[in-house]
Image (cartoon, rainbow, N blue to C red; front, side):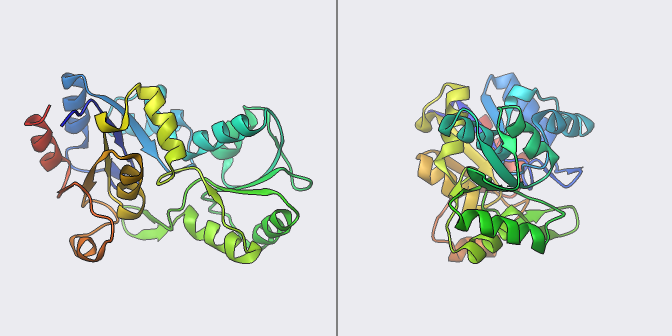
Length: 259
């Protein structure tokens, strides 16, 4: 195994809600000691990289902003690569709006070039109605990610993909997906690490995003059973991970023998 780097999911892999998962701190310390290159790669667009740095710090995990790539940041990069500036309607929270505004796109409610849908905990019918009208008028429909669920300390709640599905059903349009399992965010991540797919491993808790993402990149996949996916889900899954681990302790023990 020519493993030189990892793309590591956060929600359900390193923590659930505000609770660090067992051995997450030790896992990151181990990677640093081994000189393993890695990025925290999250589909969650509700926080800035700086916010994730602070969240991880409170859990005893040291990280730098440049080690964190969110679907919100990747979406902003997509928009900037498409058009240097434009007009966009956003269903999403302030961090998503902030990263897009930084790249000179104007956030508007009419005559827009694109509609971006991310996780928005104040989503309502009026936002759905507005997005539907704009997309039907020709705006490009972009989803930060397709995750229909979202793991917290106590439950599995609705994710951005649930809102994307509502907008898609209303507008009868399929979105351009930026976050996992899209290879778009993968290409940005690989460029940041300076590694090729065969040198990278994908660590995550979801078959539908993390494992499928790894398969599309042609990278090794390491599934953790600490978030959304459970053992019984593996039997009926069409896409199979390369490796499955109960938790980060078992993954760390495995990597100790491989790197």
